[in-house]
Length: 329
Image 1 (cartoon, rainbow, N blue to C red):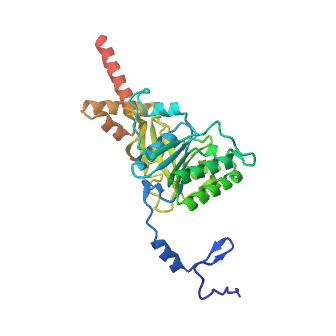
Image 2: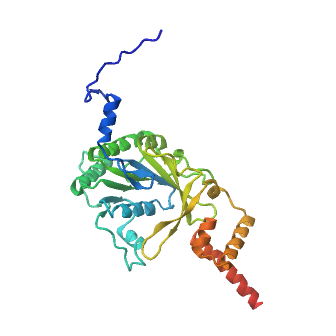
Image 3: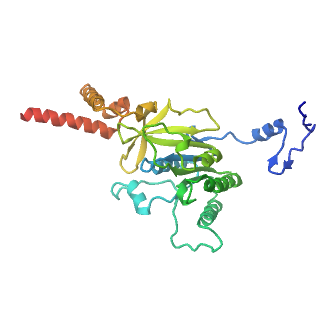
């Protein structure tokens, strides 16, 4: 016969049992009801109070997307953007027209980079010094929104799960201590781009995914390298809305002085992974050219075929060259 565990009739709502906190379920609910419902910081992918990870292979635009998210949030709240990727001049170039006509940021968007002249205390590791510096920034600004670009500078060996654990624990401690919302950017090791993105593509995936609240990833179209898609990998406050059957599709463009992801449509991930044959590409070119002759705008054509404006322009340029060649002959 199984041994029955006797449950106390009443548990002190404040009682802790070593590493655990024990409260009646009704008490948990009553306390939760006193706190506001977490708002969405970036659609259903990142909510207030979450430690979220955005990951992708190098060169797919993680920083572009993260800055865009931070810029949108800064219209209402202070955002600390820890930029460990770009120099100030590189950052300027992205958000200007050839170093002229610069984008004007909200004063609540605060960009932070490494200080090469800082003296690290002898008893601290580089990671400890950096985390402590981040905490000082939080205290001095009172900011609740952090974007960290990228994970490599917080821990040098995030590919190994045992090294990822203390990092994620420290970030979760900061999140809880200061009631923060944190978006962390991370790289994926070399992966097979013809396969769907999964949590296993994230460096140090098991520990990182287990300790974050949510995660999403950026993939690239096999047909058009300017087209990206965003896929939801982990969620806690919502259902999986942007999974493999409903990814968000974007093109990267720079209207005037702001490099950004521009939304195109929703789609199925498999349509962006498959290799497109030369004959299929030719069919798409001809259909793009036909839509143009029907009076469709470049943007309408791009949305219909899930390709970028640049790709549309290239296809139509080919048509113009062919027409001119026929006229000359």
